[in-house]
Length: 147
Image (cartoon, rainbow, N blue to C red):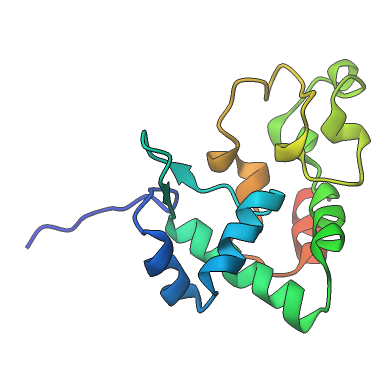
């Protein structure tokens, strides 16, 4: 029997399957995508596919929306605190021009004016986006990144 190695970011699941696995209603998943809290893979026909990392993120979102009583704006503000510039190793001079570095309203993957390190990158597979995948606590994330 051969063993397959599936990347955590590999698009595997349709919306229905992702909904069932994460126990998140389909309309909620669509809403998370619309407001920028989730970045699924898009096929050539614009169909969304979800990875294991996306499932983890759905569970994370559910915890913060339900148990922590945060709204979308609160979650975006929390995610904006993730120091993407440190994760990506951005040049200090370039940071000043990057909207993600200067904003506390939205996470880096939602910034329209990004630094050159991020301009043409796929945010879905970026470490700054994926960092909450296995850690459900923002404070833990920050203490691991900032010594």
